[in-house]
Image 1 (cartoon, rainbow, N blue to C red):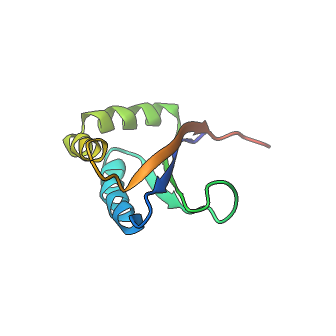
Image 2 (image 1 turned 120 degrees about the vertical axis):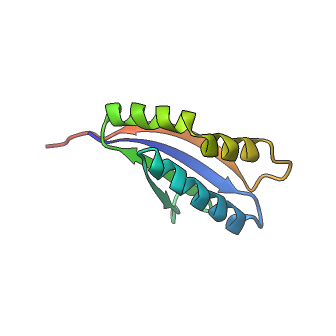
Length: 105
């Protein structure tokens, strides 16, 4: 069953395009490390105006392999350091969850 990490990311006012550019940089990294990245924009509910950053893998084994590769990736570490050390962040992370697909029949 699929396993995914879901981040709810809210752009700072006026910084939507900056955030999308950063998400595009990250997409290449996540995919190189074995994750499939999709970005969703909620149209209803409490997260309107935010983005859902969803990285999916085939199963728990693939998720573990993806996370190990991601942690060892120098480009990912540099991007995360850039984001975390920014004095003017383009966004804030609202929440992070790891979810598992459930078979319903």
